[in-house]
Length: 378
Image (cartoon, rainbow, N blue to C red):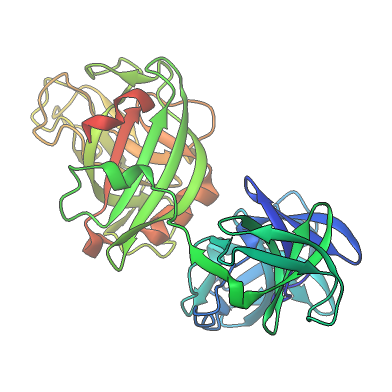
């Protein structure tokens, strides 16, 4: 199906909608379907514009797929759907894919409507074989009963009734929105004026695998923006972070300077391009401990981490150990990586760029890192 097509939804199971499709049953991901109630205004149109000088159009959603052509900066795209960090587009009469990192979507879309519960209000309500009182009754439902509504036609609801299709008068059915489930950040009490949160969690202290989620407060309500897989230090989270322990610190931290070995990818954060001489001092005895400096050392330190490496193609500084207490750990970043780190947090380059573009210093973003069992601290 294509963008803007209306679906006949039967029910929802997890993140999938069960639908009627060409006379048979099908399933579609709810991530790419907007459910809107009758009172929800239509979404504003969205324009997709290329931001890169030249952007490859590929045959599939990944750089491993062949290029079938290219688009140029400022060009408008006909977007069909989004899959991960790739847009599926109509390209010269065929299907193509472009990286969303180099496409700007402008125009706000209405968030999906809250789920709706349909409840019978009449003592007994006939279920008919068609949308009208002239159709035969095939059974009945009673007051308080919940209905599985497929669609609405005029003043009649089409429903699933004992394995078959039936129709009931909407005059005797109450459609009420149910509250959206709470997000984990809704229970946090230490966020202060932060309106953007990066949450990094792991199942326990000893795992290097992490879940990365981003949240943003919009009109006073938290909305989830992104979920991605990530990695921590080789030895997981630290109970008490020390220099060289190969563990990532837990806690809540502000976001520092964004950096990369290439030009600014579009972040609003202060951005610093890495040069061959850039290092981060990890010598606990140096007065420059836990700061970004440039070679040569000239006796100012005996140990420093080279910044001009692929892991730092893009990233940002996590403001850990700002007091620069000797031995408590240095060079704690959010950067590119998929295996493990020496104490930073990492994810794919596509996700790092996506998060960099999303971060807005005016929204006082913070990053929280914690085992799942200790989230109640925040």
